[in-house]
Image (cartoon, rainbow, N blue to C red; front, top):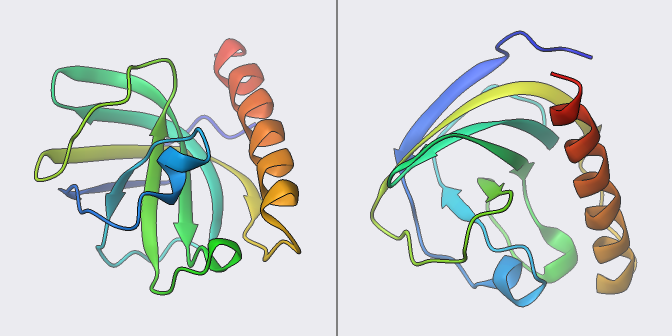
Length: 127
């Protein structure tokens, strides 16, 4: 498992369609450029008083839910869902988990997200 820093990304949290929240995985989103490959990563987030918070991070275009435009979406594990729009978000990307893919259904996407969360929790527990 890669525990070294792969990238640091920071910017202002941007509002999108709220699909993550509706799916049970609220995200803080960035629309900044990055050279990271599209996919799911694990890392740490600093956001509005939450420092070094474990996070699942998606980089890419969330086509399964009908969104367009490349973005970074960070789901901070175990913090309450709050409105972070306009706040500064910093992400330390530490582990590449899997490539992005388009799923045939939202149910398939949710199943993958649950698996990603389980893998993230195992990865963070190994640190």
